[in-house]
Length: 87
Image 1 (cartoon, rainbow, N blue to C red):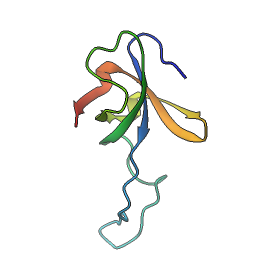
Image 2 (image 1 turned 135 degrees about the vertical axis):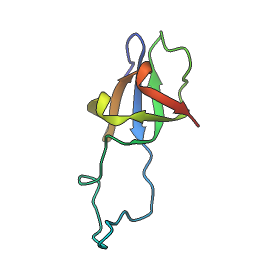
Image 3 (image 1 turned 45 degrees about the vertical axis):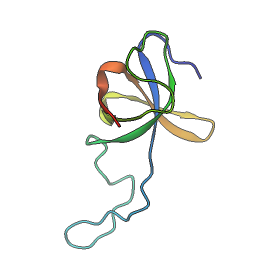
């Protein structure tokens, strides 16, 4: 898939640690807050993207993206302005 204009295709970097609530309940991915800024791996970039390249690890606000599935990989398509930092 090739994003258009200034869009970036990003996959979430899965962390192996268990996420638990304060009461000790294990939270699944579906329950965890995806509006928080979490790291993502850039899969592809559009031709107008200036500061991000394929393979970069970035922090973004996941809620600003369009959720899509590419080759069994869940990803998000976001504009470059949604990127908050590059690792």
